[in-house]
Image 1 (spheres, rainbow, N blue to C red):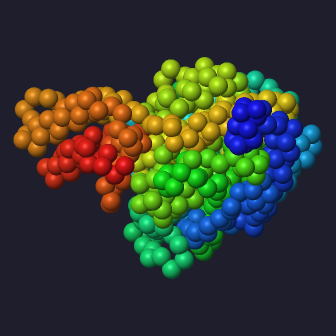
Image 2 (image 1 turned 180 degrees about the vertical axis):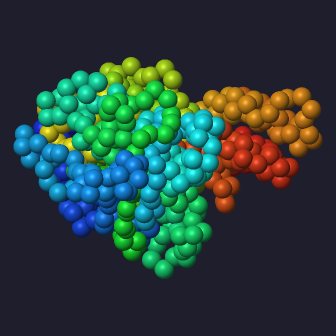
Length: 607
Ligand SMILES: [Zn+2]
């Protein structure tokens, strides 16, 4: 009798078994009915659908708009010719030949024939660039210094033809610009995700030779015109000239079909160097501000502490975006449904749960960054953790990341899901919406997904066809991801779940610090820094489980800079970023003072 009463009194908590693969299939199809390029009219379909779904399952929704700088590309063309003097060319032949830049869709997959986005790089420069083609490998600094050595002044004013891979595309364009190039073409090599890997679409999952990888080339996060503050209506904005991280030369993503025209015998050369062709890139943009919308769904917590746990996925894409990020958005909605069902039946979390559907991620984490900038103080005080869902079901290989505070919860959730947690749950690099949480608000972050190679990344061919035919026909991987999300969120929703990890943070910080400079001949300031590091380590060893463990990183958040401990660069990351860029005494002292706050009893007093 008592048992029955207890059952009646404590409503059933969210159940991973409620995750439905069939429902997730329908969700993905609905999300992919229209392209979801941030700020576009077509993208409103998914925005309204997510908002309605959150409401339907009992969540309180808050759509939040920001007005951001993300120019629309309204025209692009690419011409080429051989570098013969004009009078030698046979008069009937056109002097410059225009290349066909279109991606070819397939009748097997009608969605791939739907009008989507032109080949474009988000936040590239508009204008015309013309010059000889120079193959620049992956576009690393090393590639360009080799070219400078080989070609000298000839590199100036050339068009760099660069292969995708190894480093973030924005860094490739920035390296080309620094080397004096006039424009950039970035192509997708068949060795990376095309014919060399296996059958191409529509017979297989790899990229056909007309496939194109779009993507941002902005070397920064958030609206470039409101660095450090939210781009709300009426917010102060800097000029495009003052903005940091925007590239100054036009760039265009092209297919292998186009790229091989520039190579002798249609083969990629083994070394960087000048090719026997000239190119002209023309790009027109409309730079009127665009409106992006984050949609939040909330389940209020009942313990009154104000603590919140967030889980999010970006909704925007470069086209129909089935894999990137229809998969993550589908998982987010399914997790929200499972929690919503329990909530409407009377279950309540201790901590408030916030489901975040981000816009503008593809342009440089715009939706999430603006949101963190707007709510930074509250997040620093109350956010226990943020879970990111970006491409969660594209193949059978499971991977996960977690900052030290979320490593244990991630292991618990994996165990409950029957998954073996990766042994190296490391601090993540850049490239998705967890970055502003960690970097600007010092919030512990985690993420996971099931991955496998495929050739539709940022392509018009990233449609439900590729998911349903090749990647996850039964939506099993989708269901696994959603179930893991349910376990992780449920575990974190309880106030009994404390976040530890201060010792692990300190261990990683010491490793990062060891790379900063030789330990001999230190200045007084550096000696003070290493002393503070030692003392902070001792304090965290003595008190490894502070009451509010999730606040470890807060000591390192500087108002004007973000985290003094960790910073992303492209897809990678740096420890003690400010010290890496500037080791003046004032900067060393700032980081030393942050270390002196780590593990002090004042942190616990706030309990
Ligand atoms: Zn993505």
